[in-house]
Length: 334
DNA sequence: GGTAGACCTGGACGC
DNA sequence: GCGTCCAGGTCTACC
Image (cartoon, rainbow, N blue to C red; front, side, top):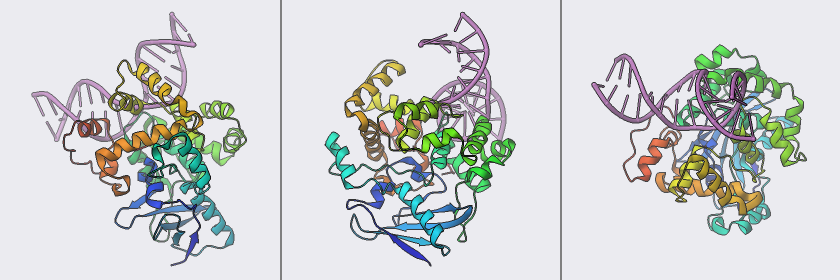
């Protein structure tokens, strides 16, 4: 099996830094709990390749990337760039230290990096498929998008659909087979914008774009409102805005002890994290993540098809109340 | 600028 | 097993 190694920042820990955001539970990602490794397909110039990512030994040790087909120079560079994006390998130790200076609560565990997708397009689609739907619905939509529009690698792993393929897909197919509902036309429009590298996409991808303009541009995308725009911003490494949703209200009420209407609780949550300034999202997120781990155990022990499907409001409510969790649904959080 | 209602799916619940 | 209710963020129409 062809393989190569990838250097990591001195504090990098695969199990902690992958299992840090719910997208690690969404297809085509597959976190193998017993092996503590991540497998998925990547698309390199339209051609699929399966990758298996492992880290043996201590934090900061290099990653071993096993491939299910050999890669030539350019494809190898493309694969490496996608893996670096997904694993946030550009966020080095000094970057992590900056966050821990603002919020020292996470210094001991070392939490700072948030898992994301190999491409911005996949991050945008994963965000759009997490809106106005419960978590099991997001899980289903991503799995079916990969099964129906994604490609199979030589070893049978799946890739996330590329924009060009999704742009060619009929809305009825997305609705009937991928269960995306009314999101069908919005997803196709997004795919067209990314496939055609629309001006909006170039603005969003440009690291020099100021936060305000980035936010406005994201809001102009189909299917992207205030929650999705703020979430895509954190996925781009802009942590000042909070993607406030019903989970924020639940966190505000159950963990922070706030009372009042949803709008009032949301305002208090936003004000609570305002002192963390441009690190607000990470403080907010790791507080919520710690709460999930208290209820479900460490994230690196969550199986995609069982624990990973259980993040529904009612399950969390029951778990928080100390009741036993119900049997998980057949199919396999943010 | 603020608000009400439609959009669609699937889980929960009652019978 | 079936029917009904409800959760979930975005978008449009309307005031």
